[in-house]
Image (cartoon, rainbow, N blue to C red):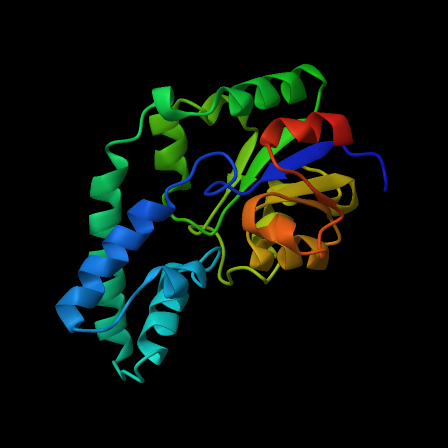
Length: 212
């Protein structure tokens, strides 16, 4: 592996978990539509954009909606989700996350976020983590979500680093595939660590310090 100069983190599921907030928000939307929605379907939404998530939900029961109707539902889901995010604060951040980010900065690594979420900046601000990162690449500046590598390539561009010198931390298989497509090394955590598509698998975030 080439010398690592930058670490790009997915946000949800890596630095913080808001899966249950996403689930609750989508559940409200699907209840209003009388569409079945459970944790199994929710798991398929990891790492993909809001509209793509809605398409996955709708295809379960072959529901056909216009693009404008889909956009309204996606916005409705986001309102529910953002309301839930107001519960976030720095006290809920795992201290291993703080230690890891601090030590990586001390070692001179560039740090960036590579997330499909359009709420990444808000979440980081709520958690008081923004200052650790040199750049944020998220759903607001991409046209294609993971497994397309765009979000990671833009992160590398923003921190002025060659993709081959970047390593990505991901918890979703779509994210792992996006990282590999970007020509980056990848460390899998959480659900993604159950597969062998990443270069490394870890159980806790601080294990990255032993890898790089």
